[in-house]
Image (cartoon, rainbow, N blue to C red; front, side, top):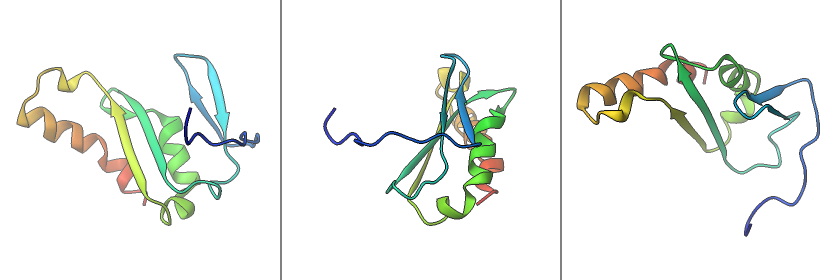
Length: 98
């Protein structure tokens, strides 16, 4: 893939898991990255705890980098202004960390 990083990530005590696929990716530092995309599924109107914990643990580094939040939920299956407000509110607890 063009532009894909060539180096692999090294394990740490800071796991980020994709529960659906059963894999774990861990980060000790975000220093090699120029931008970070943090994503989560939404369950019970909340981010997955692992995603929120990633933001908490890397708060200092994330404050210095361009940051993109991405979430997946079924709320927007009906594209209404009310649902847009609801989905944006899902981000509030994670945004409050930074």
